[in-house]
Length: 241
Image 1 (cartoon, rainbow, N blue to C red):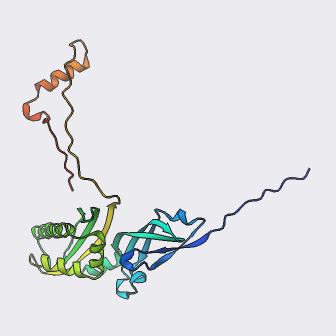
Image 2: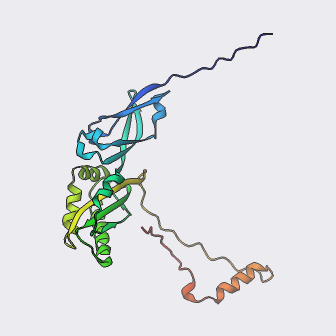
Image 3: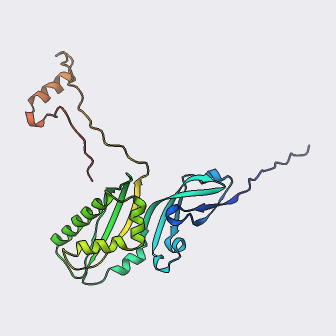
C-alpha cells in the first residue's frame, strides 16, 4: 500500500512598509516581512536617526518606535524612545573631567511617564557636593519643562540640540561644563496614567474571644505597642521616584 504524501502549506509573506509619525512627516522607516499586515501591531522598531532625518551628524542617535495601527497596507508608528550610542558616550569622557550621570522619572504634558538619563561632563574635576547640585538642578529643569512639553516636543528639541544648550546654560551657573546630553529618554508607561487615588486603611478588626489562641496573642502584642507605632486612620500613598 502506497504511503500518502503529506503536503505542507506554506503561507507566503509580503513586505509591509512601516511609516513614522507626523513629527517625521510619515517618512518610510523600513519594511517588515509578514503574512498579514495586522501582525505588525505592537512591534518595536529601532531606527538610526540619520536614516530618518538624512543628517550624518545624527548617526549616534537611535529612535524607538512602536506600531500602533495598520491602515492601507501600511504600519503606522508612534515614537517611544530616544537613545545615544555607547561609542558616542565614550568619546565625551576625557581625563581630568568628571562625568555626572543620573536616572529618574518625569511626567510630560501629554501625561506620559518617561525615564530620563542625563549625563553632564564638567570642564575640570569637581567635588561630590557640586555633582549632587548638578543632578538636582537637571531634575528640576527637566521636570519643569515636562509641565508644558509633550514627549514628541522633548525629542524634537533633543534632535535640534535646543534642549542640550538650554540645560548647559542653566547648569553652567553651578560650574563650568563641557557638555550636557540626554543619553536615554524613553516612555516607560505607554498608557496614559490616571490621577493617583488615595488609599484608606481598613477598618479595625473586632475583638476575638480569648479562647481563639493565636488571634488573641496577636491582639495582645498590638495593644502593647506605643501610639506612634500604630497605623494612622487615613493613609495616602505617594509614588517615590
